[in-house]
Image (cartoon, rainbow over all chains, first blue to last red; front, top):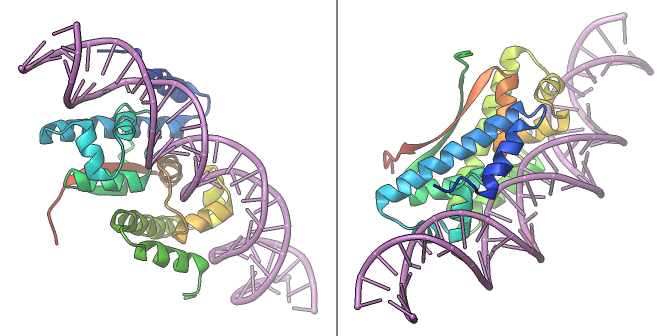
Length: 99
Length: 99
DNA sequence: CCAACCCATAGCATCGATGCTATGGGCTGA
DNA sequence: TCAGCCCATAGCATCGATGCTATGGGTTGG
């Protein structure tokens, strides 16, 4: 697996920035969402292009998102969810204080 | 309650745009998140200014968000969650097809 | 070998969210 | 009445996500 994506660098750098605890979290969430979408997409047996079309975006956008290249916005997540026949769920859950 | 906020117009207009089914959803989510934050904030007995400080933003940003004036980004949601001692939870849930 | 598909990236334009400052109106208590 | 707090909004600068097009390398099947 190519570990040499620029976005990996970008992400790591972003997560290492001082006082970026929250951005860190958001970046991590983005990363995991990307993985999940990729998983779902492959589950559907779709290519990035196909998902892109279904979600009203381009293949490059899908690739960027799956790679965790950017922190996605809610509208984009919503469109992806629809395309993948899911429901986007965003909520504030009680903090289990799992420190 | 003042029903005459500009953002209410904005939001309604946004939700009425053609082919904006997804944006509609995102806008709705934003609206509900805003309400929830307001609820949580009041639960803490905080003013918008106090929450703003705790979340590293300004009172105007909090007001805008609570009013559903914009669709928030994940980093912002993350910061608010932290300030309110919650965990931000974003996921793709199976579609119950609750149509 | 070549065509055809896959995915990863780059570069750039644009749109929209956020940060900021500044008001303004409402309410309350001195 | 006025100071002091609340919240709602406006206006503007900036940053970052998205949309788009174009490659480029990898793989596979003809």
